[in-house]
Image (cartoon, rainbow, N blue to C red; front, side, top):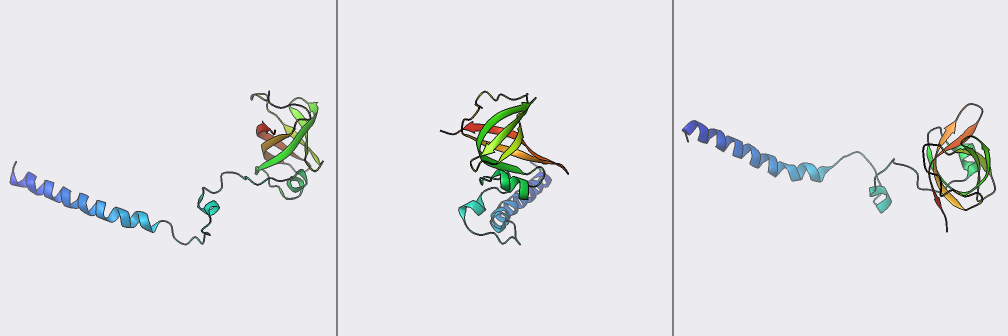
Length: 137
């Protein structure tokens, strides 16, 4: 090896050593300016959906368009096409859409279900686009 090659290798080794030495300091710092509580829930990924159960009344009063919600209740009747009536545990009903491109064979009329749905709010109506459903035992 020539002297020039040796100098280049030494320079690269020095740069690599500095990069590895600085990496833990950068990783340990993390994001700043966020006042997050120290609970386990706060350390979990945020913004990927709502795991809190809500009611049909809450959806109608407070739900935002495209918001994902979790409800418990039962499908009580077929309205038309892919539209069904979903009644929550409190007895309040809302139209729920079960798209034809999914397998809904686990849905039974009157059987207790837990659904994850996206709120579809227009100026004159609110309905649920069901994304998943699971029977409750």
